[in-house]
Image (cartoon, rainbow, N blue to C red; front, side, top):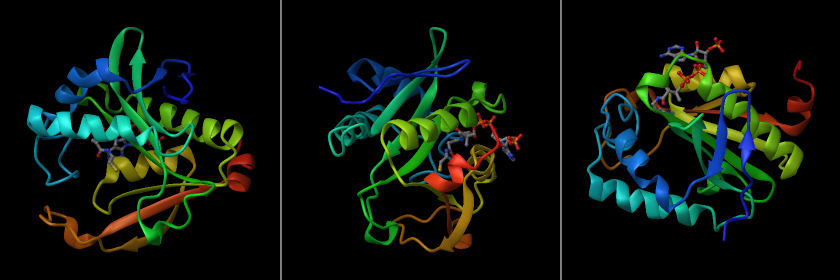
Length: 190
Ligand SMILES: CC(C)(COP(=O)(O)OP(=O)(O)OC[C@H]1O[C@@H](n2cnc3c(N)ncnc32)[C@H](O)[C@@H]1OP(=O)(O)O)[C@@H](O)C(=O)NCCC(=O)NCCS
């Protein structure tokens, strides 16, 4: 049983990721443009996505309320959003924190949807789950992801290097962390 809430924005329904969403994840991860700055920078096979799918469902079991959400505009799958507990020691304590992420089908890019969903996850994280800090990480060269973080109200914190098994073009510029605290979120213009 999931303890995640179903969330709504003006254009999106965000529902806890479930077994029935696998085909959508396969479509998403099969696009090399979507995967350009993720994993080893290439499209994933169905077998690989099935493994990620199981890990994504398991993520919802780690901390009550956190996990993956499948986003729909009407009946149409748009992509997924995530709030997950910190996974590495340098990300700080698990208590009170979550990492924000998103991945959208290419046909829905540049319509304000990623940031619309991200803003709702910030609201949910701070207001409903009582988190005190939400952060996000991406490759420094992933302009779209960085712009989405900034658009939702997160601020640049640091550039750091990650140890990848198979570094992809751009990895030499490092990773960036953006973050927002509850106090900063409360002070954002509504
Ligand atoms: C990152 C991603 C989710 C952005 O989705 P999106 O729906 O196009 O983002 P939005 O339309 O909400 O745009 C948010 C902001 O980013 C800007 N932006 C979006 N794509 C951009 C790009 N390619 N270059 C520069 N800015 C970009 C928008 O102009 C907007 O800025 P504004 O609010 O100041 O006007 C999408 O590009 C994606 O799925 N990429 C592949 C997966 C990925 O890299 N995920 C992040 C991994 S950390």
